[in-house]
Amino acid sequence: MRALAGYILGGRMQAIAVTSLFGFLSLVIPPAAYLFSGVPVALVTLRIGPVAGIQVMLGSLLVLVLGLLLLGVQPLLAISLVLGIWLPVVFCATSLRRSESQAVMLLCAAAVVAGYVAMLRITVADVDEWWRQQLEPVLEQMLTNRPDLSAGQLMEGLLPFVNGMIAAGLVFSLVVTVMLARWAQALLYNPGGFGAEFRALLLPRWLVVATVGALAGAILLDNRLAGWLKDMVFIAMTLFLFQGLALCHLQVKVRGWAVHWLWLMYALLLLLPQFILFVASMGFADAWLRHGHTVGPVDDDDNDNNRQE
Image 1 (cartoon, rainbow, N blue to C red):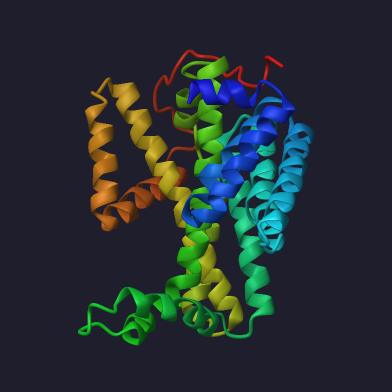
Image 2 (tube, helix red, strand yellow):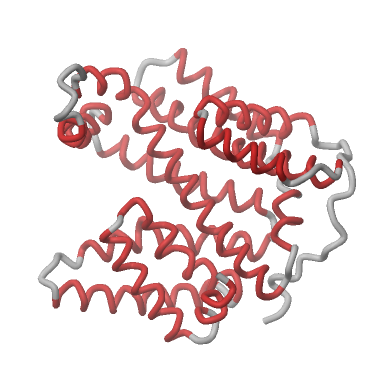
């Protein structure tokens, strides 16, 4: 990763080449689109600035459009990368570069996705039915060998939560993309800096209050606003998941525990989906309780990721 990050930061053309290549790969493997094509743009933005990130984005867009035209594919796919990945990544990476606060970056990522979700709910009359049309054919194809399971029955249980889960997935992908770029930047210029910055993550108290309010509104109301508030709860709990992870890393560092405890935590997150909610709940409580209280020394490292231009 260090060698690839160094190559990307070696010049604009190198960054455009890597971003374009990963952009093509992300069109082939959509689930990895953020990680493939977003990290190079975020890395350039973090290290050099938003103008450089936009230049790389536009250069890669030109390469992708020309490549797709030569292949006889609609170039609008490239525009989807710009609007769905590269612009949000530049925005969030810029917020992290200027604030040197991962909490600020998380809030910016949440704001971007909240805006996208609001646009969808405004433009689509029935979001649940729209997701049914999008996902039911996919589920039917996946369940061809399972006659005992009905795609329609599965969709009935999932539909009220699909939009929120998609929103949570977008926030998670956007945050992880910028964090990976920050980690790669720290490998080159500030070893240990990423860990110190992540352990210092602390979301504001007002987010706890806003999340409780959104949950109450989603339960009590019965209109389009209630659906949007429910989506906001999913987005907020994704932020609290990162807060919970930061808390676990902080406790391991302060108490001098072995790193194996962290590996156990991540294994449980992969194996037990319920554990995700547990860690997010820890982050929710931490965001409310820790303000004004000292947890302990985190690190003596200075964060100089942005100081060596």
